[in-house]
Each structure stands twice: as C-alpha cells, then as structure tokens.
Length: 232
Ligand SMILES: *[C@@H]1O[C@H](CO)[C@@H](O)[C@H](O)[C@H]1NC(C)=O
Ligand SMILES: [Cu+2]
Image (cartoon, rainbow, N blue to C red; front, side, top):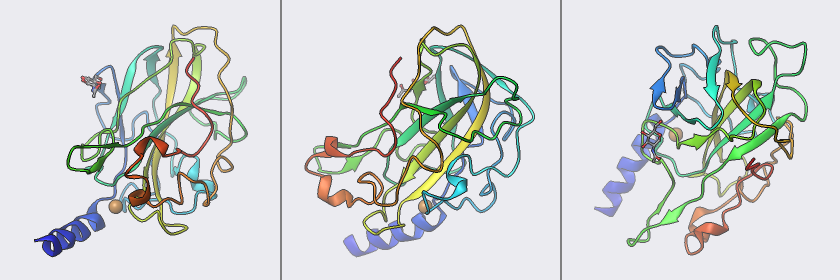
C-alpha cells in the first residue's frame, strides 16, 4: 500500500503545477482568467520557477493585464488556482505601490518596492501529517489587505512555494502572479520593510533550501523567505 501510495503521489505531482489566473475580492472572482492579473509565462505549461534569483521571480509575466481591480482596504482576497495546490509550502502576498507618473497597467515593479502583507506556516495534525493553509484546494489561502495601507495603485503579488523537492538546492518551485489593483479607503501607514524581486530571495535561504521532514516536529520553526510581514 505504501509503495502504491508513493507511486500515485509521484504521478499526480507531475500534473500538479498551477497558475493563479483570477483574483477573488471579498468572495467575488474576476469573470475571466487574466483580466486584472498579468498572464504568466507558465499559463499553458504550468511550470514553476526554480531559480529564485531569476527575473521571472518578480511577476513571471508574459503580458500586462487589460483591467485594474478595485480592492477596498481591509478586503479579504485570494486567488483561484488552475489546479489543486497539492504541494506543501507557504503562500505569501506582497504589494508594491506604483510610483508617481507610472501606470499600474504597465509599471514593471522594479526596485526595492515590495512589502509583504502575509505568509503561512504549516501545522502537524494528530496523524503527524504536515499540512499548510489551503493545501489541496483549488484556491490560494486568504489574506487581508491591511486597513492602514494608503489608498492608490499597486501591484499585488501572490506566491506559493512548493517545497516537496526543497531538500536540494534549486528544488523549491515558485508559483506566482501579479495583479493590477487600486486600493480604496485605506489609511496612513508606512509599509515596510521594502524588498526587490529579484533580490529578496536566495537559493540558500532557510525557507527555500529546507527538508520538511526535519521541521515536522517543530512546524512553527519554518522561516518563510523574504522580508518581515508588514501588519499595518
Ligand atoms: C476566505 O474568504 C472567503 C471570502 O472571500 C470566505 O468565504 C472564506 O470563508 C474564507 N476562508 C477562510 C478559511 O477563512
Ligand atoms: Cu508540481
């Protein structure tokens, strides 16, 4: 049985790659794929990024999106996933404010401009199985746009890091996308710390080069890569 189960897992893992083509705001999804979210280079192949220093780590995009989503500060958001997010690993969300004079429909998100608004950690259940928030769902984990974030135009970056092969360098797989959004309402916070993509991650970061079996006894010790979360 154990052997068969391993075979089945291996077979599904091959098809288990995914994209995040639709943003969902307070339960309301975009009406079509890649409308407010920039189409990613893996829209067809579903292949993840394995080099966290590559230029693709920022938005993995092949095209800007036609529309801009309106997101009230304080809204709950997540993404529809094209396939089941069956690999173990954290889900992280970042925002980058569009500079004055640039357009959210074309700005490339370069420079130290990204702040993290949330991440996830694993849990270990009574059967000693490690699970992650939203693992095996056809959606990403929820997050909240901080109420204190100033109103304006932003790129919103969603990322799921698949860690099933992460015990070897270059084995972690990054699945991500960027959406064009206008945050309304909002507050007067000063988001930070700010990081650049590429730049925020190294292949040797403890949250990227990691043997999950070694942290199963202390799942909270997992250290997600990138800057600290800005809580607003
Ligand atoms: C995620 O947010 C949606 C609304 O967008 C809500 O219906 C759902 O219950 C939330 N899920 C969790 C686990 O909080
Ligand atoms: Cu996969």
